[in-house]
Length: 146
Image (cartoon, rainbow, N blue to C red; front, side, top):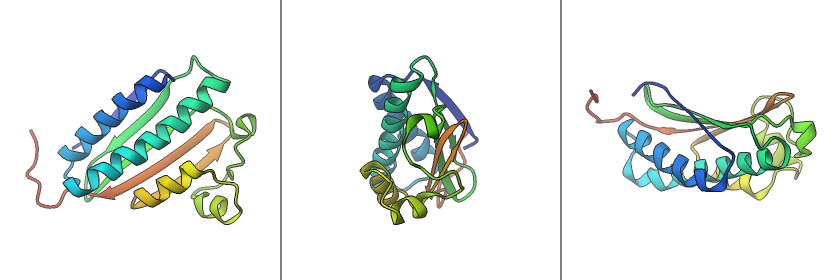
């Protein structure tokens, strides 16, 4: 399945809708049924973090989701538009900052939950916002969808 992009208002009620959409796309992309709960929970956690940050700093800006189910991986990127220095979240401004953050005790419980649920996690924090990219194995034994 090709790329899907989704934006939603920074409201907690929309996190549930985002989880449902991501789960449906993951299923169509060939993610194993046994992994769908992990996908749903990790994406819900990442979206909740983004919604909370937006509500504090830029409530009129949407949260962005990018889903890609091509190849053997299903990838989800949750992006907020809250600059890390404004949010005061202490995330490092470097690619794959998760190991750095966890190693220095600055990551919150949500990041630990996400890292435990996703097969691969990368966090990048820039002056334009924070992106959490997660991926899971996909596409094995699934016939192409039309």
